[in-house]
Figure 1 (tube, rainbow, N blue to C red):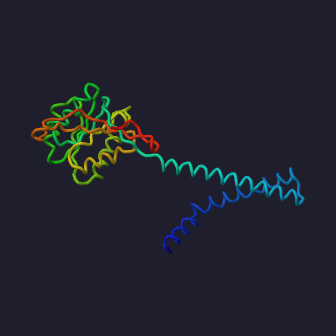
Figure 2 (cartoon, rainbow, N blue to C red):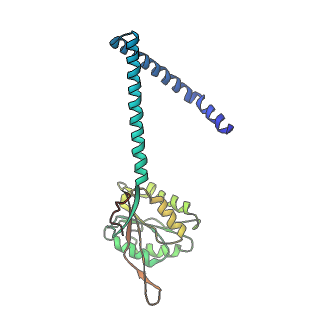
Figure 3 (spheres, rainbow, N blue to C red):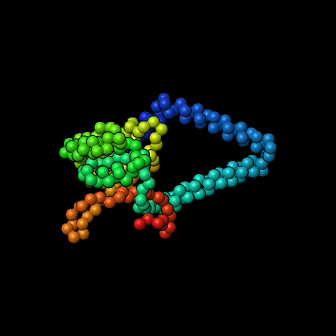
Length: 244
């Protein structure tokens, strides 16, 4: 408690904050005095006039408080009633694609789905799946332009998040926006999927996943289905969208 108080006093009385505070207080006081003098010249200087000025100041103060309270209430109600709604849909074809490399088949399906519009694909892999990433590069050299990005710790979602953020920040072609690249979060470890979602959630970066095609008789994976895009919209409680 004392530590927080001393820290606050240090910030308040530091040269970086005390000078702007004093200057602002001075000019605010001058503004108040000037306004008071103007009202005295208009209304008068007797006791009844002073009461009128005081009453006017009180009315203005009450109105300001009411306006602030209304704004705060509106924002609180919005946070309380709005909720995210998740939708699934068939994605449009994107010029950019980010993949987590586990199985060549699912990566191949995602890449082929976005062709012929797909121009560049970034592959994120581990040391164990680097050979699979290289196989994808050899199969799709026209879009897998950059070398595969190797993750050091496949159990660290923050590393995945940072790698994906670096793609959007440093590797997009000139003129591209984040909305031109869709990221497929299915692949590698659950931590990788979480890291990708953390990087793209609450942004204009689209997300998709490529589901496995499972044989109902044997329960084995026999291929991949077309990708599914996940979208997030905000709606009032009780007014959900058309999410599936």
